[in-house]
Image (cartoon, rainbow, N blue to C red; front, side, top):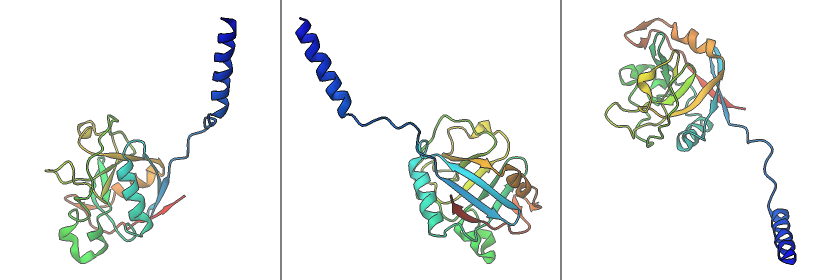
Length: 185
């Protein structure tokens, strides 16, 4: 019996020696920096919540797809919205909010829509219609939970989002362009 226990202990030690060591730290989440004339803000992307949305955001940004787009929708105290490729062209203002959609299926989570959350815009009638457009939550929005895909959070520069939200609007359309450029660290 003691010999059998010794063999089992030897086998367990051998198996443990062959297993790769566990990482001591998790890989750093990718971060995107949105530069505007109002300042910059940093978004920590969350591939753990929405891997397809993060991958699409990274792909679009690396291709320069966000550069020159604007925050085209502002709801004071609620959200700022951007990322529509149509917003690169000031002559297409009537179409802002319609571009870059219909590309991604929903990746909903149970996270609440608290200040600083970054989520994908979608068509109101289709939960699986996200794309390049996104919004940043300025104040808690409990009614949005389970309706939109969260794929990031502002890790610094929330005061810039607040400043952008003070841009004068007509309805929810800014009266002046707040263009962005997106880079990565």
